[in-house]
Image (tube, rainbow, N blue to C red):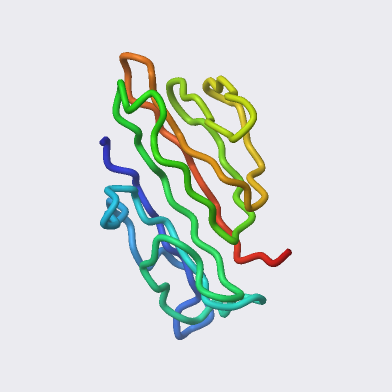
Length: 138
């Protein structure tokens, strides 16, 4: 996976905006690039960000995930209680749903509303997705 550059901005003590961090985004246990997470909505802009895979109650997570080529044709399905905004940044991937499969390419987006799903990269190149997950309820 190519490093994802992450720039974290905030106001300094003198009230002027500045970049507090500028460098590679930290990696999460699933090897996705951690962009940011919140633990409540509205988000507190003066707090540090918890490094989590799924958002805590009332929170959100933004991350960039690289799927290796030739993943399992029918990977294990999962369901999260989240609203996810997904954008294909590079490559192609198959969104596996219970009733169908959807082919996605660079520039395609998916709104995942708590459904069972899986991602399967059946191409010969890596696929990169930006995913913003938000705690949700029925």
